[in-house]
Length: 424
Image (cartoon, rainbow, N blue to C red; front, side, top):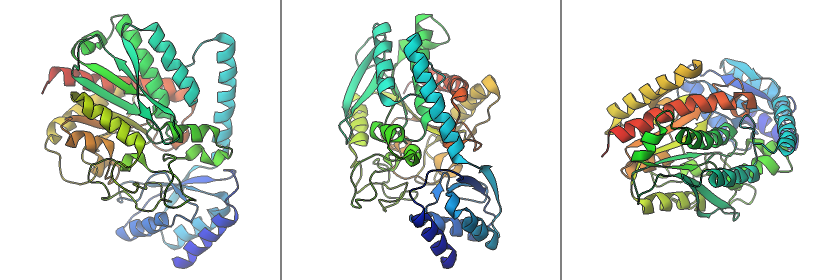
């Protein structure tokens, strides 16, 4: 095995400056514990050039790996020699990236001409922040924008507050984009902001009733620095950047996985201490200013009753715990709520979501935000993994944004109504 790892690392190092031309995303099917351990060793080799979009956890869950074109033959040969079956999910990552960029350029031009905002398109941070200002101006009786701090690179972090009045009413938190490359989460949150405002204005679909009981706080971009990097880095390679942009102990490996940095069994399973790893936890608990800003805001408010975070991809609706396979005390209720919410989601377009705890449904993840919220007494804590299940992965076409957002909204509404009907 070491020979194959060395070959892969050598090829990746030689061709590290190439784009994604010819890169494949392989879906690997571990059939034994030995297979899982082999894949975990591959992933731990941060110099291999392999990008694990999902992780080796059990034989029940496939592992998606972006493989550089230069390493493709070596990786395929290695998997075959190890008797690990695989299929090709994406046969040229660069083609998807080119289409995505062309659509964004075309959309930006159309928005300039029509002076309108297209919810069926991806937008950069500046455009999203301008959209937020426009929405607040249009619905000033309902929405305010609150700055909760600045990022490592000194960008503002904003939350939209939807409120019909009252001091520190019970509140619901929704965030998106803590992982920079998960663009469908940001786009969904943009659509949600507009939908909440529109439904309230038109006295439609539970929203006035929900906002009569609770305030809603929506953070569209929880990792602004990382998100900007995915849009404006000079190398398109970084469209798939996941982490923040803070300086680490390794000058060649900036950034922390912000969803491993929370004070929720920090440093446990599913979080790496290697700054070059995608799931690097950071040097210490809540060391990252972005995490600290959100945590401080929620704790200073003191009356949040639900915490929901939007990620992609895999089509999952999950609840605590992520750090342990132990059942959360409220598991029966949380599982029932998530199950009913997933049924509401499914009613729109037939999209199927899997429901369960984070640990058992996707992977061990210590230091995660949903666990942090639950451990702080916010009972209704959920994590969504939005579309899809791997055909496009992190590069979901923009023509699926509205449908994704619409079905997600149905699930969120169900959860919010349950929160209102079950005060604690």
